[in-house]
Image (cartoon, rainbow, N blue to C red):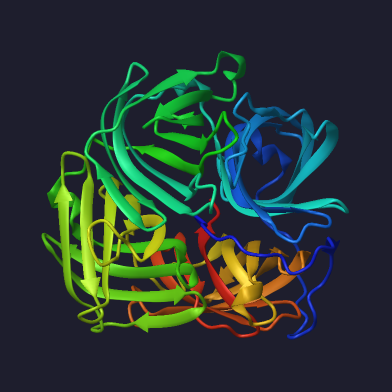
Length: 527
């Protein structure tokens, strides 16, 4: 989940503990599947974003990491590097942090752990992650570092790199999200856009920025790319885009991962990917005659925000619009027929488009999107009173909906991840980050698996938690679906579900049973 949330931590003590009993005990199933340590082998570009706290502190600090690690196929991390940036701009601007070693283990179901050995503040330190493989080429990860002196949590993923295609060239769509460099904030910021690169230079491009609800659109952006000769195996380099410096890590010619770096120690905390546009830019005929599922997350004046929904596009109009919203802990469901006046525009030169719909004369929801293919793109919310001011800062993914949905198509092993905000006390004032990473088998739309969950409200890490659940499909399954997730000894958590295809599901919480949550996540089939 692309997060823009920051809040106070409720307790200064760091601990690994169990949740209080509010539900039945669920035994984790034995791991079964085709994975092993040999499934993780090669160089992987990774990203995690979350929060960190040191012992005695009363507030957590948002941060992001992006880098590359090397796994040897037999349980050892042999090296790597990464860049880190904190809220406020402190970053690894003078060079990446070396990963000097580490280890990992992968069970048959793809669930495992991974550690990085690093040097922090001049002393040896270890970062710990939970991982779930979604294939031998990629996976999901959750930071679950917890010691007597510091803790960090955050969600992310990793993708196998292809050194044979370490180059930046062609037209890319990007989404960079995080916090700006305002010393009085920092405040949430989102940048989406498209650029064309050749010979280490951005030759053309366009960008839309939502910086603390101030909207700007640039019809021309500049930039450059320089490979880092000291870290060629990691695919690392330095980019300057619109005068902001980024470290980048190349996955392959189709995807590049970025993280902002700030030489003065003050600046934005931004991370995101740039994805190659297929066949240059999708033409209107194929780009706009489909049904899309979207998920955006971010913040509003009320706190954390998630919107997840579905719509159908046909030329310049939208239909079949449905959406679920969690705005600061207040949920609203806009079912079939409750959203109207849907419209869409699209520029086949850049892949940029706009879409909007409304629930009333005063509640108009507006978005900007950039397509990287006819079936995928990035989306940024720009709802507000005028073209220069928004009421929220949020961004995420826009994906074409395809396939048929039933108990026979949504079946087998899946990885599950959610991220967002939670408070055990039911008070928005004490909210902080929650991350969950799980592996679950789905049969007859029922879930059975194992989760790790890290709540920064109380700084509580629970590992190996038995997990069950049930997905309920409505009609043809294209909208208005639900999912109940039960964690051992925890009150069941209710989610609203939007199916992209039988292999990928977006979800967000739909009520606050047991806790006030503002979380969203994915279910992704393991390959």
